[in-house]
Length: 92
Image (cartoon, rainbow, N blue to C red; front, side, top):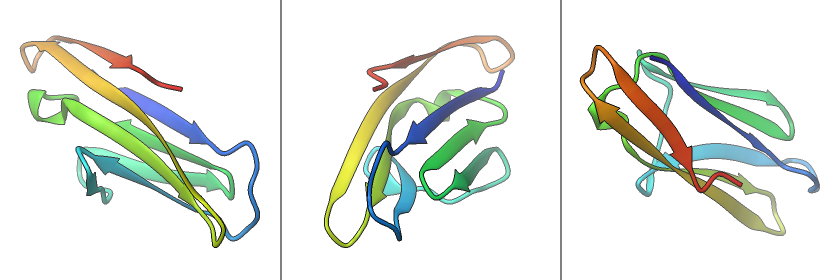
């Protein structure tokens, strides 16, 4: 099963840096996790095959020279790796 969540900055002066953290640790794209900054104001996090180790709190960080703001959501994984239910909670 795949999971994805988007992060969208409604306003802010450029340059705007957007990145993701999981449980407080900055993420990098990997084999099963892809981070795509779609434009200057949006970022997409995609987990291609969700497993139990992906459960946790994901935070999108948007920052410029003036301000840093965050939005977080918990990824809850229930069930076996072959079949699971994925739920994002707390997404704003």
